[in-house]
Image (cartoon, rainbow, N blue to C red; front, side):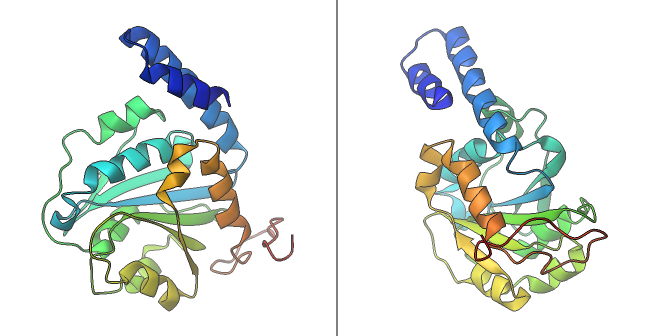
Length: 228
C-alpha cells in the first residue's frame, strides 16, 4: 500500500519537491510489483488520437501514465495513431516520464488502427516471449485490422481494450475474433489502484492459451487460467 499512500499524500502537499519525492516512491513501489508479473512478456500499447478522441484523449493519456509506469522499458512499446502511426519514446518509466513523452500530442485526423500496428511492427518480440496488445480508445473504426496484425510479427496472445467514451464500432473486438484470440475489456477503475494493474496483467496472461499464436524453442511453463 506504500504507493497508494504516497500518491494520496502527494495530492495534498504544496511543495513541488516533496510531491516529486512522494510520486517517485509510488512509482518505485508499482515497478517492483509489476516486474515479476511481466517477466517473459512484451507489452504493446496503442493510443487512439483521432478527432473522435478529442473529449477523451486526456483521460486516455492519464490511464496510460498509470498503466505503463511500472513496466520495464525494454519490454514496453507505445504508439499513437490516427491515420498515421507514431512511436512514443518513454525515457523513464514513471508518471513524469510518461507525461513528458506525451507532451504536445493532441487529437486530430481519422482513425486507422492498422497504422499503429505497422508502427509497432519494428519492435518484434523475442522467440520465447508472450505478447499483449493493449488498445486505449473508443473503437471508432469500421474496418478490422487483423491483416496488419498478422503481417506485423507481433503475434499477440490477447488484446486488452481500455474503452473510453465515444462511438465504438467494434473494430477491436472483431479483430480479436478474426485472429482467434481473446479481447478483454479493462475497466478504467483498474487505474485507481496501482496494485490492480499487475493483477490485471496477470489475469490477461494466465487466461490466454499457452503458445496459441506462436512457436517457441522451449515449452512455456505458464498455465492457462483453466489449468490453474
